[in-house]
Image 1 (tube, one colour):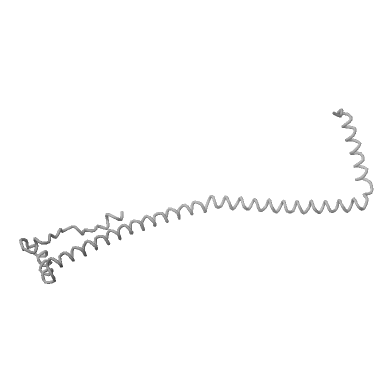
Image 2 (cartoon, rainbow, N blue to C red):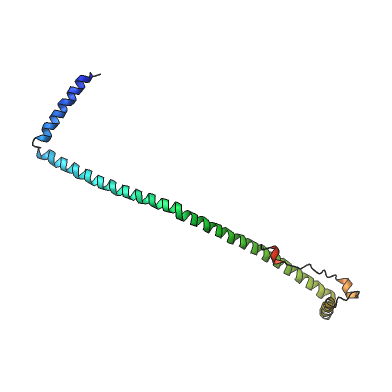
Length: 156
């Protein structure tokens, strides 16, 4: 290890030499290199300032997004989820109606095969008159209320 005093003397000697160089005439080669370094440093500082301004604007944009855009996006997501829930309910309701229509068609076919065309008219008339005891009515039992579709049950 170099003693501390020797270090201080060496530093003082270097500083004195540098002071002579800077205070005295600068050789043209050194001056051109110093000018090049100075221009490079100025360009780097300018780029650094531009980068700092860019980062500041990005932070402002991020804050704006956090404060304004994210809550708006969350509201839109809730709205879209509500729409999809409604669509699912509609799909289920349509399936129920389709199934009920198939059941009605099956019943109409059964009635048609049991009573024929003229007998179908009589059967429907008997349903309207609530007549009971007819022989044809015993072949096919109509269950009133089988096809009640209540849309309020599916949309709340």
